[in-house]
Length: 143
Image (cartoon, rainbow, N blue to C red):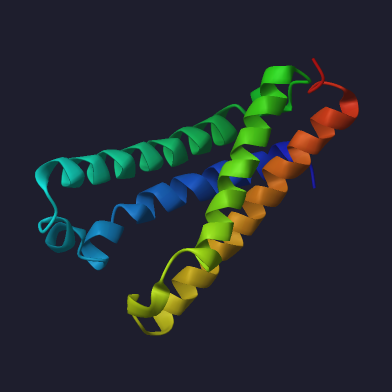
């Protein structure tokens, strides 16, 4: 399968994740939980949530609309692909080592959602990791 197609699919997946993420605050009752925080801590939490969401949108738009930029044999393209691969690898590791899912919503819908998320994260790591490695093999990542 051509890497261009895989990057575009990864972009679509990240945009779908960003769209679906808009429901997370309601589903996980963030308003109620963050209301108990000090104002500055609450504001920082929402700021971080916004930053993360914007990363997903930007990664998605870049990959969907300009995959050629990520396939250019340049050090910048290699660095961006490497960064995105590490970003999603870190998220995948945190899913299983840091997040306490004992209080997560129950039921088949939520289990299916977690399986879909983990599958997406794995696909993103593999797609951007493979693109990064192809840059290294071609010498683009070497300054």
